[in-house]
Image 1 (cartoon, rainbow, N blue to C red):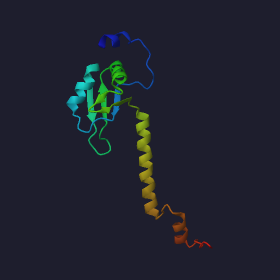
Image 2: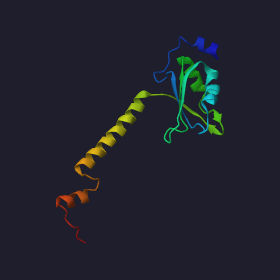
Image 3: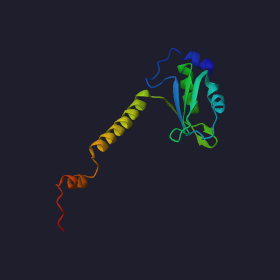
Image 4: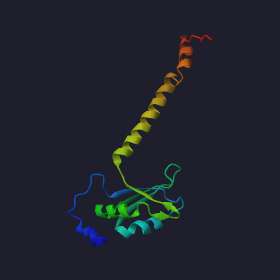
Amino acid sequence: MAMANRQNRGAKLPPEVNRILYIKNLPYKITTEEMYEIFGKFGAVRQIRVGNTAETRGTAFVVYEDIFDAKTACEHLSGYNVSNRYLVVLYYQATKAWKRMDTEKARTKLEDIKERYGIGGDIDKEKEKLGLFTPRRI
């Protein structure tokens, strides 16, 4: 595989291709050593980070030394069966990750402002607090 990678070095890559792969649907009990064993077959791996919190369990980041090794790994390991789970291998896209973080940050900031000024989400309750509530006629 390394020989095929060297031949394709002059090929133009799509913009989403990079050295960092984002892996989903991993078994929860997979070890870093097992990850190196699986992903190391496609080239030199610089770093592997396996998720260990409730939100990140079953995911990992794999950073390759070479972009062509990452491309080969992504092509070959997407759909690969590990402990009866099929891996989802994607290229890491920082812009999507930052957008998500910005959205969460904005949401928490909005909640803080609502709490500070005593604003809730129910319009009828807000009108009642301000004395603008008019009872519905049946």
